[in-house]
Image (cartoon, rainbow, N blue to C red; front, side, top):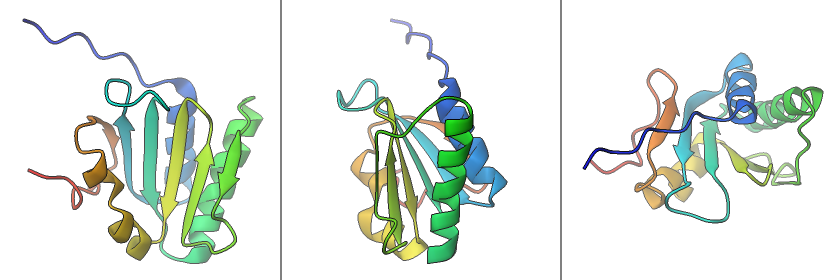
Length: 129
C-alpha cells in the first residue's frame, strides 16, 4: 500500500524556523506529531549557545509570529534561560541550552515522529538508528 502524501508544514511553523535560523539557532528540527499525538501537530526544537542566546531566540520567534498575526498561547522557562517553551497550540517551540537539550532528549522521546525540517548538521544525537 502506498504511503499517503505528506501534508505541507504550515506557514507559522516555517516562520518560527526562519526566526530561529535568523538569530543563529543551531540543530533545528521540526517533528511532525500529527500521527503520534493529539495534543499538538508539530514540535520545533532548536538550541542556543548560551542562556542569553536562548532568550534571544525566544524573543525572535515571538516577534516574528506576532508580526504575522500569530500569538503565543503560553510561554515558559525564560527566567532560567536554559530552556524555553512557546506554545502556539498547533505547534510548540522548544529552545534549549545544549546541556538541557541533551538531558531532555525530546528527539529520542518522540523518535516515532518523522523529522520534516532539519537544519544542515541537524541534531541526530537523540534519534535511534
